[in-house]
Image (cartoon, rainbow, N blue to C red; front, side, top):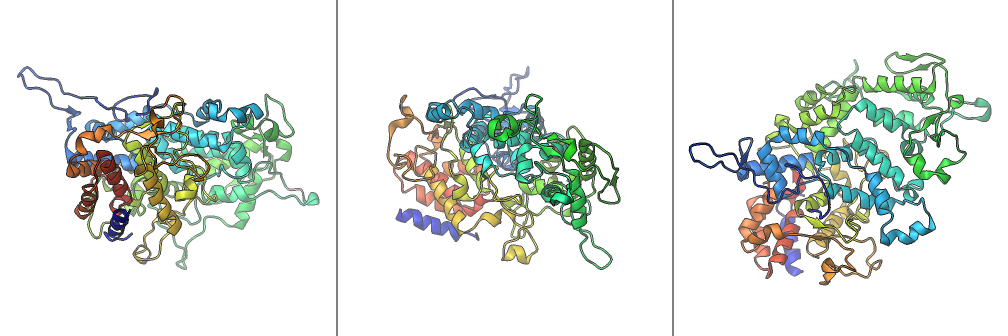
Length: 602
């Protein structure tokens, strides 16, 4: 422990602070161990090399670049996936990802509810699907499904159009969260306009932002339309607070002041649009309290329009657009969504946030403009073109770190955890699930899928921490949750998942389970008791005796070739003192994951 603390202190001074069940296998998506790709021999007798599309799979610089590309485009990858991506090229990888089918989290939640360790709950309440089912289903799908890009895009979209699945009702009825996340997955490569519509009508969103049961005004009863969703759909889901140029910069009025996109009167007008929405019909019939009696049905269906409660007066939208009186509720809503989708602000507002989620916190005007140029909210492949523009942009692909290099971002806590799991195969437990992999992760590291503390996400896109970043007018959104508690939480979490092998899961309460991860328990090979998951490092067994080769391998696999020489030296000094190969790989992983070189994706 003494040596461990010394090396952690040294790190802080460097600079400022194959799942074993059915899945889809294909080149470039992981699980491609032992696949050899050869060019055909020609009639000269010279054998083809290990290439695909003309790329040398073993070229270290290409592997580092492919690793960096996958770090931007996914939650991480194993070494075989990095090799295949380098070999096939990024355009081909993107096309392959776009073609992959969506894997449903809601359906996985239904599968796992019948497992033995939930059996007692199911006997008591047939329809109960608590939020913990979402946890297990989310990690299961993300560790076994090949749709790497869709996974990362859905996570990004869920941080723009935010709901919280752990609040009150949703904690008890987890299928609301499962269906909402499936909605994000389903629209990850499609139209922005369709996404905005499905989010607006989603029952989870309706309850969360209170346009569920939103009634038209009735002054006699002192009823006025709820303004919450009307405000957030403009501020957070479409146009933002300030008028923008197409390159993302703010516009100024004649007095040199920023120009607001809307005011309080606009919010009141939009609030009238979103009246009349309530619970969906169950089998064609209205039910008095469907959430109490049919929560799973309600979670899977969009809200229905009740015309008697919809405001049919004319409504003044933005820029002089007027909705005529006497329209149906859905006519008002659809025309309003068309209006917001094609607003001049929407493309730069949404595109800049997506760039921030994938590649860099501070995209320059040209980068934003180039992505905005391909944004078409009604194009069937809208988000495909946006993702292609973000990930293949020259600024994203060229990495030349210098003292003045500002491209990049702090890796989010969930990305760090998933990067750890994606890098080596994890064997599931006997129930073919990953039960404890992300238990209470939000409390530990400050981030968890669909668990942002408010509709404003885990952090603001314009957050600028005090110090050099703020002084130079830059932003670093992810630093908003890098507080004293979460910094220690991340280090402890990494330690639990690496040093305290062989099992990888974490628990909420130390006394909740009779299990000490530091003890050597043979659950991994027990047919009866194996309920924990363990990570397989057999891929690097040949390197465990050579610390320099091991570190270089992990540099490509995890740090995208960004480990500095002094960082490598610290890691080498630490692992050379350890006796067993297993100890060396676990200590090396731990030190890479807590290093500043890894923390910042450049």
